[in-house]
Amino acid sequence: MNRRTVRNWALGLWMLIVIWAAFFYAPAAQGFKGESARIVFFHVPQAWVAVLAFCVNLIASLRYMRTRDPLDDARAATAARLGLIFSILATVTGSLFARVMWGSFWNWDPREVSIAILLLVYAAYFALREAIPDDERRASLSASYAVLAFVTMPFLIFVVPRIYWSLHPDTIINTRGSLDMESRMFQTLMGSLAGFTWLFFWLYSLDVRLARVKIARQAREGE
Amino acid sequence: MRRSSLASETAAVLAKELRSELRSRVALNAVGLFALTTLIAVAYQIGPYRIHEQDRPHLLAALLWIILFFAALSGLARVFVKEEDAHTAKTLRLAARPLAVFGGKLLFNLLLLLALECCIVPLYLALMGYAVIGVWGLVAVLVTGSLALATTSTLVAAIISRASGSGTLFAVLTVPIALPLLVVLIQGTRAAAASAAFAAVLPALQAIVSLAGVQLVASLYLFPVVWHE
Image (tube, rainbow over all chains, first blue to last red; front, side, top):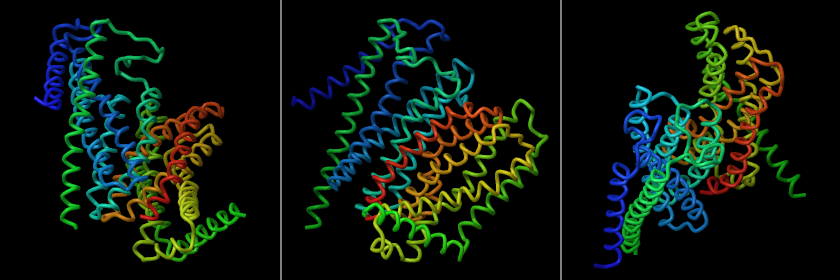
């Protein structure tokens, strides 16, 4: 087995341990209906990866503006695609939790609105890419839009949820700067965060490798 | 020397935009009539008496900004789309530096928004029976909000002018970016309506000015990339 195969198996094993820990190692949280709070071990890492993907998209977009390398554009698009998928997953898991806790899938909570706007931003990014047939122009204009969209993100993630009263449970590190979580739950959550981050970079590297092959083939065909 | 040259080029682009708009009045008609039609529809269907007293502060502030925001979306993209349609963008690239073009177009969009607000806001207050206690607070929210909205929409207009299907794309790209601003603008308008103290709108003003600031800096950095693409 080569190193890549070992890493892939290790990721699979790690995610299995995270799933086991989420259901059997971590205790049930107090103040929540039944076992509903266990969804935090999947919902929070998915939301974190959605934001991480947005950051990777920004870095790749800025790199593209400097280098004009089509691979950087592919990196930005891949990060945005994965960000969109993880945003949808975070929205779905959040809605399931809302249904159990508050009786409705959607409550127009500021955090729900924030993730919905994040989804719209990602969708708009792809709408723009689809509307530009020329490769270089598409890369350049979508990179510009990605940077402009990113500067509003701190307002979406940090300002808007704090302007309005929210149903959403306190974030892991709350406004008082303290950690309100039982140690086994915290260990499981950290393990899940690491696992989902690893999963994101694995998916990202697969897609970027594929894009590299496509770009090389296009270059060969162009010669 | 360089600064005055940039300022004069910006003023020239703004003057060209104003002359061109006063000649055709396309953006003025689109924005003004859209806002007026929406306002009449809202006033006719809802009016001053069909909203419960406890819902009035939030609903009236939200409706005002929905009218202004979507009216703005109908006309702000024109500054760049018309250059591509008329094939004058290349000449403009040769005639002025990118920052002057962006500055001129941004100022034009800002003036268009302020003109729209001068006409629509008093009408809205009268037709909807919306009593605003903090008038100067509302003026500050309207002016800073217009600057933030004009900044975002001017750069997005430059982006979509180079894409196909630019009319629909403008709304698709602008709405997600402008939504946080819209939330804060509604918050600020609500605060201005409820209190005469300028301090009541300060938290919203800080958020609006911060948003306008970061978007302006990002736009100044990004516009040369978009313009020379």
